[in-house]
Length: 137
Image 1: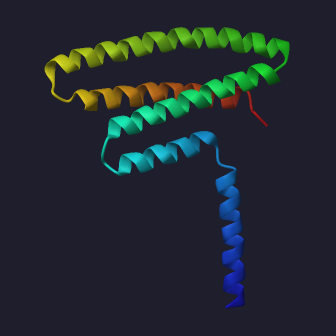
Image 2 (image 1 turned 180 degrees about the vertical axis):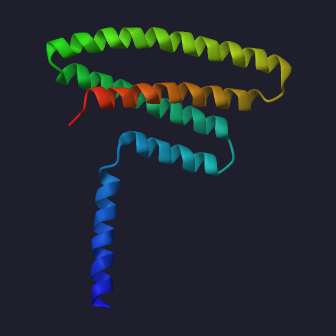
Image 3 (image 1 turned 45 degrees about the vertical axis):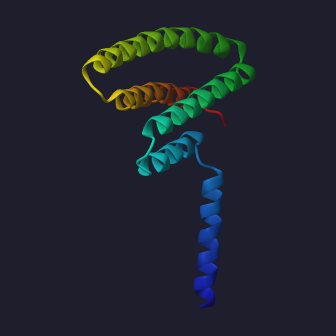
C-alpha cells in the first residue's frame, strides 16, 4: 500500500510538472476543445480561441524582437512582412467565401465559426513556425 501511495505521489508530481510546462499552444487548444465539447455557442468558442492564438502570436513576436540579434531581427521583420501579406490575402478570401455563403444559407453563425476557426489555424501555423525557427529557450 505504501508503494502504491508513493507511486501515486510521484505520478501526481510528474503530472503537475507537465501541466506547468505545457506549450502555450497546447493549453489554448485544450481550452478550445473543452469549450467546443459543450456543444453550445461554438462561435463564441472560436472567437475566444482566435483571440488567444492572436495574443500568443503577438506576444511571441514582441518577445523575439526584444531578444534576437540585429541580424535575426531583420530576418524576422522581412519574414513577418511577407507573412502579413499572405495573411491578408487568405483572410480576404475566407471573408468573401463566407459572404457568399451567408446569401445562400441560414447557417450564418456556423459559417462565421468555421471562418474564425480557419483564421485561427492560420495564425497558429505561424506561431508554431516561429517556435521552430526561433526557439524561445
